[in-house]
Image (cartoon, rainbow, N blue to C red; front, top):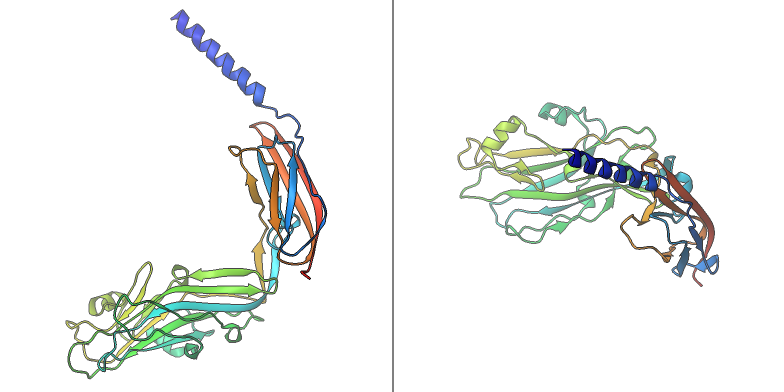
Length: 325
């Protein structure tokens, strides 16, 4: 028992001494230099790194979205345009397979997902702005709508909320069997700023589509048709043959969640680019390419840290980028 206790004491003391040995980091010798400070657009800017004892290295190029001075404060940019796009797949061809589709935007929908509220809202058509998939058999290539600006239909000055909505209709009174399906996926609602930033407001899932029928509840929609919103596809499907509404007129809405966009948008703080982590080999250089002319404040941050001590060196350089000749 005494031998076990003695061995444990030795191990504990060794561990404590090891911790004490590495609790405090020595001063960093990190440095960064360039052969010249003026370059042209597209020319490689090579930063030479000396010292080699930094465990972590972070980099700010000085470009929009990667500027050191915005590391702790939000960057606000002015909205230039709002873009929307999607992909569609239409019903198979045939005289009995009529499917009509429309896309709308509204700024006075009250947010209640019932037919009375949808009918009472003012819906401005966006259908003609987009390309819609041709009729074809299932599993044909999906058609991209094209990315279009819908800024003119949004009141940016007031920041008034808006909703997007699909409406799919199909006439009744037909004979024979039909396959009246219309599929939508791959949505992208995006803001473009004057500073050439692109911020995705919502993808397909982020649109949070909800079904609205003239008289069926969401549960009854599922019972009477194949219309469904899955994790990747929004399917508008005609009434099934067992439904009492089979061969009658079909109308279905898919309405998005509320969106609010003003004249300005908060882009948040800028983040650094991690060049080196603890497990990486020492760095001797870093190469960066600038696509726009201007004067850039470049910052490298070298860090060594333990549980009780942190050593950090910040190196700043000014780089001038000239236009291509």
